[in-house]
Image (tube, rainbow over all chains, first blue to last red):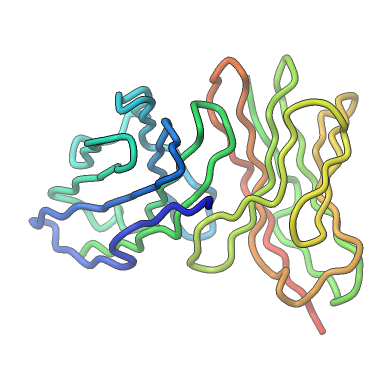
Length: 112
Length: 113
């Protein structure tokens, strides 16, 4: 089973809202990733967690706040987003850092 | 600096014809290379990967890729495309020293009847 699940599938939020994206995997992977993807562009890496610790933060604005409560779960907390943050947010996991990444279906976010 | 280049932004191919997507990389040692496919509004699906060993790699959906160190390339091929192969294809690189992850810009494949 190489499934990564993401909820919700779609999210519409205002600029003053607080919301969270959720990602889950049950493959025993110890590395998890958040990517942002704008239309017609490749995914851009945002955060990487390894063994539940934040390993990489690609200079992401503080209005995005990641959390890894346990080895199976990864959250992305959103607060005071801007319209330009509208994108597809993809989660991925891998056995360890640098190994093959398996992607979830993504959350389509629209910020009004 | 590490980089991945997909020279073709857009390719149109007839159903049943062969397909080749180009990927070139820049890295001082042997990278880990992947091809992913993405249908509209979907996540990325792994087609195949190369870490080491046999330079011709077989993947899912009838795809294969060949790693050529001398040309710094990892081109993806399929002998006969199906309409369902229409999608965006991304070449992706990581390294064993956990260098920066690199996606290519992607190649949009359109399949005509």
